[in-house]
Image 1 (tube, rainbow, N blue to C red):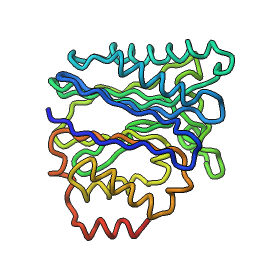
Image 2 (cartoon, rainbow, N blue to C red):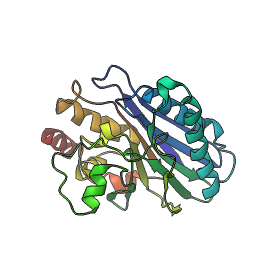
Image 3 (tube, rainbow, N blue to C red):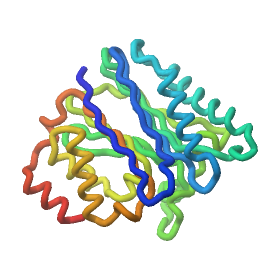
Image 4 (tube, helix red, strand yellow):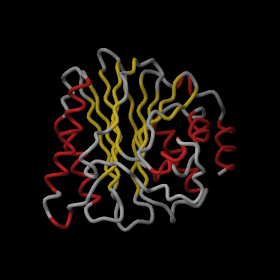
Length: 259
């Protein structure tokens, strides 16, 4: 199974970049990780790096995947953060996480997430959000309440934050040729609607072109100097361009003009 990957991580206007991204693509399996350190408390960037490094270092791309091994990768990452929290300075540090695991031989995908970093799936011409944020805004929206004026950064769970619950794990997904995944932090998805993400994907034929188009739209909208850290990984399975490239360069220019 062919896998094509592109990624971006940007500091925005922040003093530091607390986002951490990475991937391992082995012969039998692949792993993709995006973490966003919790702002407002010391050590967010450390928690993000510890979680990212733990998963990538423990992941074995030469073996087949199963649900239990993925839970183990996430548990090890959470434990690694807990170990760092023994320092008084960093006792409250935490990080969001979104991770995608692909078994290349059996063509299966697994995912796990904590917090408000997201996973999207583009399939058969349509984009859908796979994860649901562990946030107060999401809880209120699910309950049918208005969320105007509510701080969207208020999380009720992230790695390192809560010992009483685990990350959320998705059901095993059978992959299809042409599937496209997007893993991203809230600094990225906050600036694009789901329709815009889907629309832009119809105008490119590679993951690097997709992220480049989104960056151009970002810069054109004036976000380059007034934004949070923003990071993303685009993962293309098989030959997505057969289902994505439905528009012309003129459409891409029109998309940029909307921003």
